[in-house]
Length: 124
Image 1 (cartoon, one colour):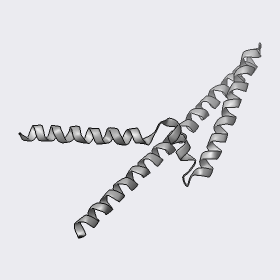
Image 2 (cartoon, rainbow, N blue to C red; image 1 turned 90 degrees about the horizontal axis):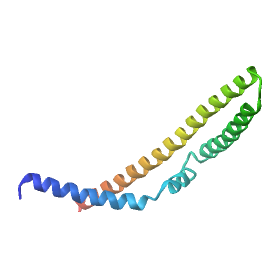
Image 3 (spheres, rainbow, N blue to C red; image 1 turned 90 degrees about the vertical axis):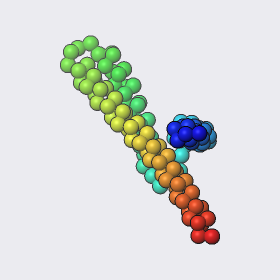
């Protein structure tokens, strides 16, 4: 077996290990629930409440924009609608970045545990 085949075999083995880890992590709802368990729990709750309020305001300003007939007022409601949509995008981005941070911290802790176990084996 040449070196290329050995490398290919090792990469395939690692891919299988990674697939098993990814299956254990769970889906989107598990990750969202995980954000409510960390040290940023209060911030996550506040941001989710803000997302709900902004979502309700988006619906309200869209409704107001649809109902009005003159030219000046719909412009105001339309601008409010767009600004609230941008705010909602930023809020959702923050939530997903928090989920990503939690996932990365979990992986770092996993690596720390593996390193600690390996160093304990080496010291024996």
